[in-house]
Amino acid sequence: GEDFDINEETVEIECAPENVHALREGLTEKGYNVISAESEMIPSTYTSLTDEDHIKKMNLLLEHLEENDDVQNVYHNWEMPDEE
Image (cartoon, rainbow, N blue to C red; front, side):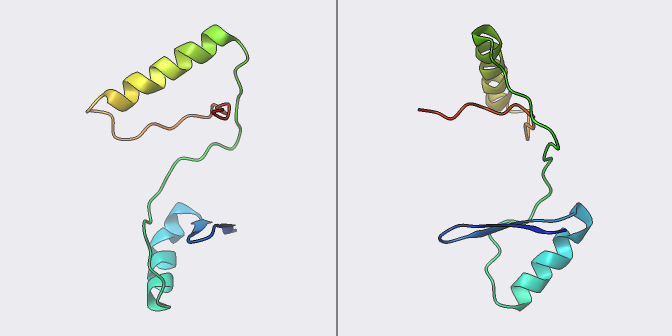
């Protein structure tokens, strides 16, 4: 089933990858402005890290991956702590 996340100016809709094209077409036909329609990897389970050393290493790994020009997208299931 589809999942909706409604914000002040946008609506985020999750659907099965095979339905992305049809959903985009349907919304466009109804006059909605589709900002982006792409497949993303969303984990079904998340993991949290409590060890400070592990958290530092995970942050460093993600930082290096994002800085690497050869890396297009980074997906992970780490439930990152909220920035304060």
